[in-house]
Amino acid sequence: MMQHTSEHVYSFPVIPALIAAFTAVMLCASLSAAPMQAYAVTAAEKQAEADEALSKLNAMQDTLDRLSAEYGEALAAQAEAEEARDAAQKRIEEISVEIADLQDRLSERAREMYRHGSTSFIEMLLGATSFENFATSWDMLNKVNENDANMVAQQKDLRAEAEAQEAVYAAQADVAAQKSAEAAEAEAQAAATVDEMQAIYDSLSDEAAKLLEEERAAQAAAEAARAAAVVAESAGGGYDASADSTAVAYGDGGDTVSRAYSCLGAPYVWGGVGPYGYDCSGLVSYCLTGEHTRLGTTYTFMGWQQVSDPQPGDIAVNWGHTGVYIGGGQMIHAADYGIGVIIGPVQSGMIIVRW
Image (cartoon, rainbow, N blue to C red; front, side, top):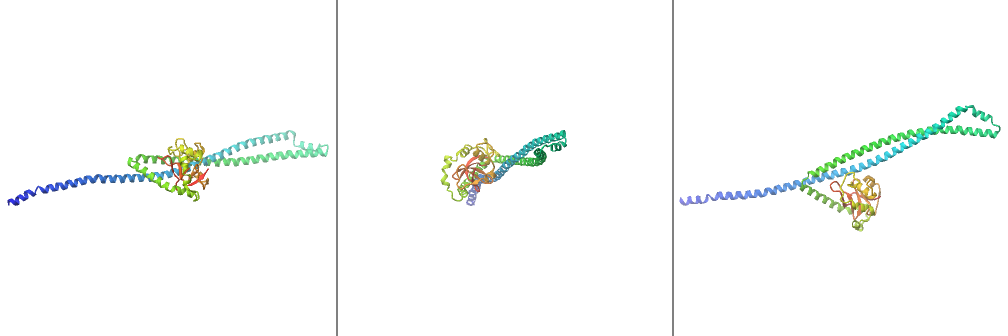
């Protein structure tokens, strides 16, 4: 009995010890697994946050590019309509002066006929002393009547032209107002888009922002891999990117490329033509002209002569984006909001044109 009792006394404390040890091991495993699991979830969340932000920012940048083109086209159309309107107004003013002059001359003729009476012409003809004198008087009379008729006809034509010009003025004034409204709407939409983009940036955590920039860099690398093919396609398949790769280093292409390099690091500003910020077509406009005014939009540049021998200083463009070609499949462009003016690859779908 004592032996049996002794065995139980000895074995009893071992069981709690084993249980305690097992519990401690499980607790440690639980504690160590929890941070790993939490970290994994956090990383995935940050990546999802970055992915979502990148998708939204890319879509918004596409919207900005489209609005920029629409804004520029509306402003150009507005300026053209205003020019036509002003030309019509100028012609109306000129016509008014011409009509006033004709009225004065016709009034003077009427006063003259009243003073001398309508029989003076008959008397002048009957009083001719010779046939030669009669013929001269008759010819003079015909000329006077013809001149009067011409003045009346000219006045009538001028009044008709004035009415036509007034119609032109009204139509062009309407076009100018419409285009001004379209430009204002595009500007307002762009401002709202920029604010939304800024809100996305501001809402990102540091980790998500870093991941976002890494994904942007990956996108740029993918575009770079396609750049040579894009340029070769623009050149009709006969282009070797290595042939002008030194242009990137030496900055050939004259003032256009020099100005493009001087803008590196400038911020992206929707509608901007410098000097404190640029959108894509604003940057190209400045680089080509040296003036901080808009030369055109992507729609304008797409209509220029496409080249088969891309040279630094040419323009890389598609319907939504544009930049200054610097050689080696690269361009300087106002990339997008939050990035600004950088060197990057010619993008898919672009052609190379020359001003």
